[in-house]
Length: 369
Ligand SMILES: Nc1ncnc2c1ncn2[C@@H]1O[C@H](COP(=O)(O)OP(=O)(O)O)[C@@H](O)[C@H]1O
Ligand code: SF4
Ligand SMILES: [Mg+2]
Image (cartoon, rainbow, N blue to C red; front, top):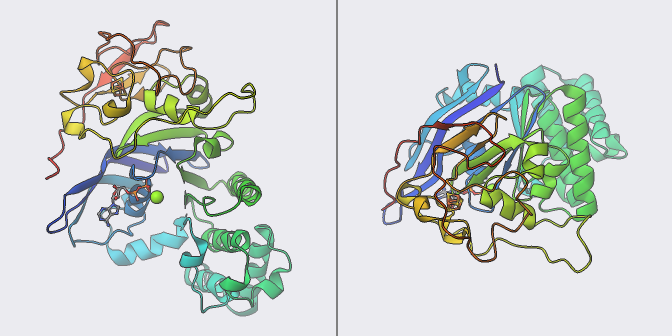
């Protein structure tokens, strides 16, 4: 059984006088113990809201509706009371945010922020807690940890602050760590170090990691399984290698086309996906990616594309997927639209004869007013 099983998670924000936003719309994915799972997609596709829902950090009531399940070892995190969730957070599940400065308390020394967690969740106090805190800082690569324990967040560089935040997150040896764009605010060399550190922590401790990023390049080196999100839904899921080798969803192809490659020829341009994430069709009316997709056909509008499951355990939500071997990253998201094809939702359109079964479409969502 998976450590975390997210099933049909939906989050809706309703604010008086404003448009109802279905930020997450029937998202399902799972995470095994020790596995690194990526949630990837452009800004606004629902990555953070998904993780906040799992962590129980969305406001309850106040126009926010959370539906579905997020079972951690059989406990539905979406339905536990606040107190239980506070215990689970930190002890079983921890989160690292993009901006360490706003996640750390600016008026409390780093050391106390680590020892507080150790006291609360592992019952360590006094010298034992301080020793463990110093060991944790050492483990995340903060030099001179004993001195650093006495310092305040503003005395540390951005990279060191992110390391301190990771130390706090792993202090209780959580079974699941969620990292939401943990390197976006850092410069490139520091980014690589932090990713390396996360990889080491996962390998050494067996902690499962959900890596949230807008950058497929970040998941390239670390994720076992990748879920690509678009407009609140998972549009493709596959193990990392097959996803990079043979992306099937045109949006995944577009994301791959927007990352630099070492093997591209000189002068070859990156191929960003045309349009913006705001150019979406409501899922109720068809494929949300249709306004930006050069592979769209008449079958792409009218109703939401069903989720197709191939025998290689890949799923994608597309009626005219890229055939295996056809994708040159970037090709599907730009250039002239191909002639309309008749590929239907019941097959995966694959010349290689990938057997495909169709999972029934998600229930139609309510209209966004
Ligand atoms: N508190 C909120 N109220 C209304 N809409 C929200 C709220 N939080 C997020 N959203 C909307 O939900 C969508 C997904 O946001 P988010 O999960 O933050 O995206 P990202 O993938 O960039 O992390 C966005 O359209 C965002 O504007
Ligand atoms: S081919 Fe159609 S269903 Fe597939 S991504 Fe493009 S618009 Fe969506
Ligand atoms: Mg986000």
